[in-house]
Length: 214
Length: 214
Image (cartoon, rainbow over all chains, first blue to last red; front, side, top):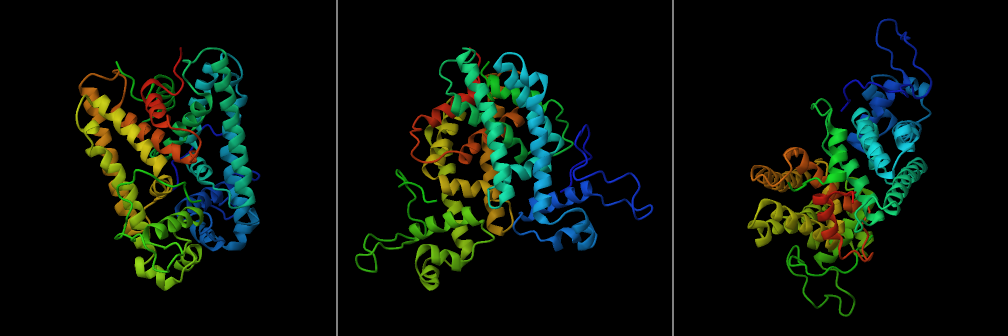
């Protein structure tokens, strides 16, 4: 369930740094980042509602009280995990490539960035996309997801107004299909498949068609 | 949760016909089709694992033993629901438009058909797409889904061989993105939005791009 080592992650520490020296001498330390990774794996496998702190401490190989030392409970773990995915996605929107230039180029930049985040933080994004709004944290995450989608949708409208899209494109539908296409990658992408070109390939599919005729 | 009345459904009866005359005189009969609809709604809202026969009989407004008269249990309901979605999807592949003609035209026909089934049987398809393989029935459904996707993937390969697609299209990736695009519609589609043109619009997005430049 755990993903391969992730790289280029500016937000590695989630709840304060774990520190390079483990508390238990030479054994690898179970810092908050590592516990979060274990929890996300369990949430995805069992479903959030069906996962207990008991399950989590067993999966992490530590006592429940060690777990509570780092996280106040299950919902705090869920929030930290969803926050990580959301922060990375929103960070794309602040990058120069998403801020400047014609709307279509900005959209292309954002699509590539979304796929890149998905590749690097697959379990976190998977969890985010499964959220249905059953808890306060889930509703908060859904609202942030909607804000992200609204930003993309407004760029699609800008592209329509700029006359850069074919006139038969409905902006609301295009924004939804775009989000659906990008997010569907979590359903089948698995690390290590040699898919370095995936961000560009998904962007090309969105702009030129998945099945473009010759 | 319940969908608007569904039409053009050749497979309405699921477990033997309910018969037009209700057993309880003038009160609307709770035939197997109606119980199935209630169960699918509960499965989607609560999750299959968290739903008990108690929940189902309460939601249907009948006793548990009446429920057992029609279905042997929760898993039989799940199977009937998944079967309905799968049978309708596979029926598309047997239609002349999916059987004859150039691969790209057959793919276009299948995409339109998938979206049409999704519109008409939204809760059933939603349930099918949430299946993760936790029970024997779920694994059976996943296997049938894979067979459907494999059929589509082989048509994509045929289109590549026929030289009808741009040479940079990778057939395995295109097949996955195509399935992702179509299935993502369940995430936001709600009945009654005036989306009669949706099947054609999704097909156009798949072939010409979601955001085709002018």
